[in-house]
Image (cartoon, rainbow, N blue to C red; front, side):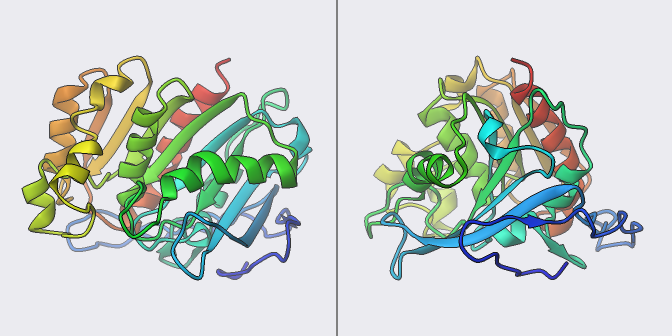
Length: 291
């Protein structure tokens, strides 16, 4: 299938005829491990669409992608995992992969065995650049995630989840952890790859420089300080050994010893997101379907 394909309105694109999984192509990548092509999606339905949101910057347009098993009526789905991309990443980037670009979660999801009595859905959204919390310029992608998108699922797909989980990479990994800490009774798990966690405001200010509106904003949304809010929740973090955010991951792990933190070979790139996708999905699926 072509990357960037948009399904008009709120229909679903059947992908069962896309063929078998691509043969994995691997090669050295600057010491960051093997590069693997994401699998071609099959046996699922995928809808990618754009809507107007009051919580994103002008022109207030945001894309969302919804993936679920082809044989399942979405109205029967009670379990949803929200997938948050990295900075400037789109819902389409997260779900679909063209060659070595994109993450391809739809393909990895299609490889998973689904319990017909406990089906679940993946929902991705555009990440933007505002780090998933309310900002002084008016953008608030946390509200988009926690309020607008669930309303959309109910209105357009008839989905009313009773179990919800979070997945994220890079900035989206930070956003997933922040959402879980903000609403710890709502989500059953959080699984992230290379989360963009800053050990201090000074560290953020000297690197990215625009993730927070100032030191007070950082303190109010410091996922390291709030890590203990997730003491009751299954948490999985994977990061590449050459990821510049590893110090932040270690600081988070020190505050939350119950988290499963895996530092493995890799960097902070699409290759690592693809290599980690099956692990994050398997972890999430187990938590979503355990009750």
